[in-house]
Figure (cartoon, rainbow, N blue to C red):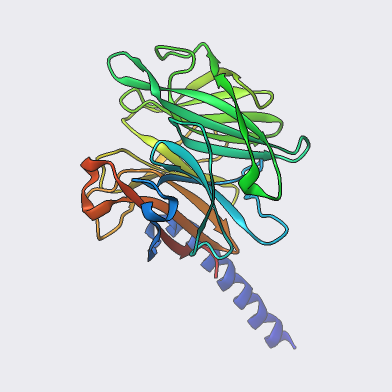
Amino acid sequence: MLTVIIISVIILIASFLTIQQQKINLTDLQFLHHGEVVTPSMVKAHNAKDPEFFRFANHSIFRDDDGYYYVIITAHLFPAILRTKDLKTYELVATINLMGKVAPYVIYYPQENKLYLFYSDWLNTIQGDIKYARLGLAVGNYSKDTGSIKFEDQGYLIIENTPLIDPSAGWDPYIVEINGTYFMIYSSATHGVHLASAQKLGRNWRYVSTIIHENRENPALFQYNNNWYMLIGIYDASGYDLYSSKDFLRWRLLKREWFKDPEYSVLPSGSTCALINGTLYHLYQVPLDGDYISGRFSLKLAYTALEP
């Protein structure tokens, strides 16, 4: 009996050490590349880029009663909605009539049955030493018939005390609610990556800090083992850097070019992550014909197991 107990304890210790080692070796994970899953022809556009899952405010992924996940993308100059059950096959649901309001991020707020669509307006830009998009918000009522959803533009965000050129300046908004406060990470390329906060979803935000001082954009986040992780790159990078944070306020670099695709020497950032049943899925944009300068993209999927 004592022998059985000793062996059981040894197995438990070995399993614990394996899990600890798995945590330590997050930077050494290898992805399997599934291939292109969304093409411009599927969404009747010249482009398919900037994917993001519909999420609840706490960052968990929305899934409807029929088992569909929803993804919002940029389809040329318009947001478009896709849906998928297996994360590997997608179909177009609707194109949203918000021309120029791209790089969208959608939060489903069930208390109001509303969808909050935060966007980057690249048609009405602000010219400084660089060109800035304007961050804005559109709101729609959720319907099971997702193709019938209409969004009403609420206007540009007002970020109090921003160090940038305008209270709405920035792009690629990414929003998470933590302990009753909403935090928004957003980009400004050569002027870094920034954090703002708000007490409710809407247009009014307050600047918190610059969390990355380098030329980076298009954050994609996932949460694992009580830590936050961010994949982020830039338009002419060859891969995504990996950052981590315990409190969402302070971020540290873990590894340069943590995620790469062997088919592309340049991999302009624009992606989303989904951690589902122990598997991390990375849905990301790739340049058509390998030509990132043309600005034409399709979407590709990669995945890796984070848990046995």
